[in-house]
Length: 192
Image 1: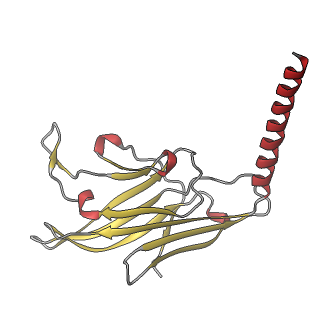
Image 2: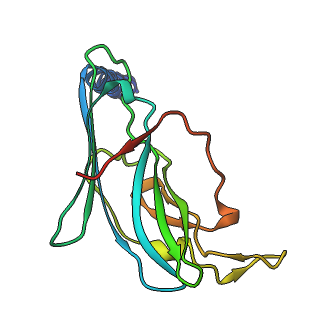
């Protein structure tokens, strides 16, 4: 009985020691980065895609040492890279900051210039999103073209936001599934 109790206590002590060492290691790490890949699909419709801008809601912007958006001309894949460094930080976020694609387009019939925001938000904590994350191909026009009708007979686009949830699961959200968050520090990342 005592042996079983002693073994159980030793396991608990070992587990606590492991947790404290893991937490202290994380606190001592001064450099961290996020790398996010995505592609854009902008098929022809009533609207013509022009270009886009990318804004990061970067609450840790004062520790940012590298902020870059690049595009591979062969694959058309974009890479958003955010790197941070802080010697005295006692925190480290395991989720990338939210970012917003401001999509600029033209209504072909009237030649009117318009724009829409596509929020990409991060929620949850498992697994920690520190390894490169591929969002896949974002169907831009599905955030603009309306074919779904709500109770007030307004034509709505099928999607309004993208959420990366637990276990890096990527979800497309409709109007009633998404609530805008208050933006803290919106910083534009220009395409290089």
